[in-house]
Every structure is written in C-alpha cells, then in structure tokens.
Length: 230
Image (cartoon, rainbow, N blue to C red):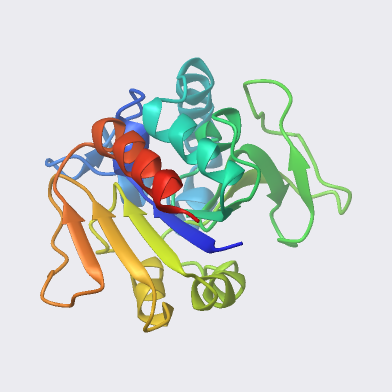
C-alpha cells in the first residue's frame, strides 16, 4: 500500500473558523505573541497565558472539521496515510483521520512545567492556577512555544522519508523546523501543494501547485488519487 504523508498548517483550520496564529497586524487574538506564546510569557504572567489558551480551547471545541479534513480521512481506504500537522487543534482526529502527529503540541493537553514527558488530557475547558502535575508543579499548556525545541520533528523526519506522495496543505512553509521536512521527501515522491498563497516553486516536475482553498481542492485531489490507485 502506498504511503501518503500530509503536512498541514493553519490554512486548513482557518476554513473551520479557527483564526490563524498571526494576523497581518502581528497579533494573535489581540495579543502579542511574546505575551502569550513564549516561555518568558509563562514565567511573567502564567494566569494570562492560561486564560488565553482557555479561550482558544473553547473556540476550537466549538469548531467543526471541514471538507478538507473529512476528505483526508477518506484517503485511508486506499492508502497508508500519515498526517503531520503544525496545528494544535483536533480537527483532523474529529474529521476521521487515525494517524495524526502534532508537531507543536495539542490544545486539549496539559503538561508538567518541569518534565515535558508528563502529559495529561484536559477534560474541562479551563486550565487553572493551582492545578499540579505529579511532581507538584503547575500544569502548563502542552504547546511548543516560540524559543522552545520541537521534539516531534525527529519522529516526523523518517515518516517523510517513507512517503510515496506528499500533500502540503494550508501552509506557506515559512516556519522552521516544520518547513524543512519537505527536504526529506524521497526523490520519487509526488508532491502536491494546496494553498491560495503557495510560494513553492513548481519548476521541479515532482511538484503540483494548486492555488485554491483546502476545502475546495483537497476533496478533488483525494477523489483523483483514489481513482488512480491500482
């Protein structure tokens, strides 16, 4: 069975109403990124950080998977599909995909402030000050913040190396190290880039650039790939 690796970014979630990480004004939900998404912000004002992510969690739980998410789940009927997402939401899982790797963490999880291996599922909407891990330290969102390492990248590289087909959806490939994953795709792999603002050069015959929204283009491409699959 052929292997498809799908690399997704904020664009696919934006079509479900989830605001992208940074707007054109350099703010995220009216906050400077440095105030809510860095280790320094957590040290300076953890209550603000928790409130910010509680609001994001509420927004995400109210959102629904869109046609792109559900179309990717259909691919599993004909291919071995691995999704690698830069998004912290759970829309891929709720859309039906069974193999999803979150490079930048998950909004529905918390973790220890001192041991990143102590991860817990968040049942309620809100995280609160005073909620402790088993090491008796404050729980923080299980999110990779600016200035932190991306530990899952080491597991993502061999997945990309094994791809027969790569789909890049809703990402401009400007954020590293995620953007560097494409460099590990095999020379024989077909690569599809789906984004209205795609900046991928299509001079390489491995690339097909589709400058459309994910909700429109992904179902069409999925249908085509399934029909072409022997």
